[in-house]
Length: 189
Image (tube, rainbow, N blue to C red):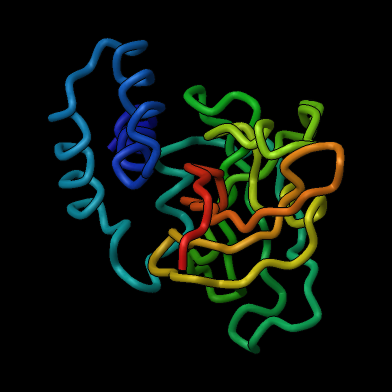
């Protein structure tokens, strides 16, 4: 498996169809490339629970940074973990993070803003565009969310968001894959 196949594997997990199609058109690949990348990732061991973090070095090469995971509420198996940041060309404003526990196993795969990239303005619901923000940036702006659904590397969160400068509020469901915003929709319970 190589870096492009890994990026296609991530792309196959994304939910923003418009962004997926735009990216595939940009790199000149058909949709079938996504399913092929998923098959390769399974064969490479990326879908196995507790797979070694060293697999990402084999695929992606040297990381751009390694830093300790700072959290006071991690379960014991995840304490003393490292966050390994890789830069992926398909998501230039972000780094892809693989957390590695002290036993060398991967967990907590997610995107974060690259350290040298300034976050775009975030003050209205219209600013929330797919692949422009990560979950932590939105939470910093809006505060805590309510979890609606979640499974492996995907979650749907409920936020109360100002719709205009006059202060009117609306509930929105935001979907994230690997913590990268995928879509925003008005919430209808």
